[in-house]
Amino acid sequence: AVKKIEDRGNIIDVCKRAPIRASVVGISNNQKLLSDTPHKEFLDLALIPYFDMGDASVRISYGVMEAMGYTERRVLSAMENSLLFDRMVLKKVNDILGESGILQKDNGVKKDGLSDLLVLTNERYMQGASLLTRGEAMELTAERLQSDFLIIPSSTNELIIMADNGDFSPEELLLLKKSIDEIQVEKKIRLPKSIYRYSTHEKKIEICASDQERLIGLSLNMEKRERKKQL
Image 1 (tube, helix red, strand yellow):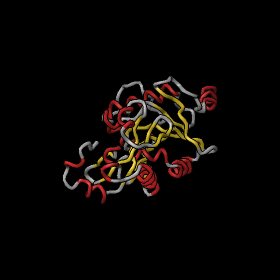
Image 2 (cartoon, helix red, strand yellow):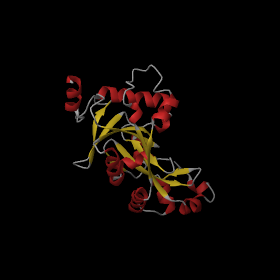
Image 3 (tube, helix red, strand yellow):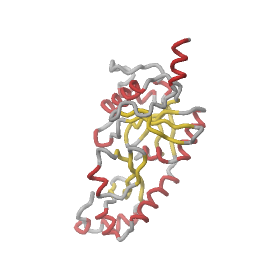
Image 4 (cartoon, helix red, strand yellow):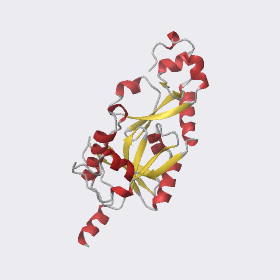
């Protein structure tokens, strides 16, 4: 945060020329930050605005907003509009996971099915997890997979996507999330230990598993999982 923006020379002019974009953080572990930042809540996450200056960024706290002469409505509107112009990138994740050691490491993660995982981010590969809140990005992902799908928040920069075919239990998904965090993601850009599910029929995202409340609302397709066991 920029608390003393007046002491930073021409930073106000620089910020005024910079686009406002969205970043995503967990609500439960960012209460102090959110009390000082305009934001929009989404499930157990919050979108927060920042000035994107290419190789640097400035979080838009209430203090920064006041110094800029901006209203909260203006800032949040610009933040949400930026998501509409963020081009999504959806690609295979198996090579990335392999290089990071998740596929090879004996960490208790079931390896079957991991090669079909996808990464969803934006073309800037920065703050791509905010696409979770963009309905069009979720619909396009569903079209690609031709099914409901699960979302593992890898970091603030990207999401891990997998078809909801019943191959993994909620416990296994949370273990996968934990392994990704420990091996691949810096602590400062980690997101909550939650798993999300997108329903193609309802066009809606919900939390289907969480480490904070073990297995909230367990809406994974467990019937498919049970049928597979019986075959």
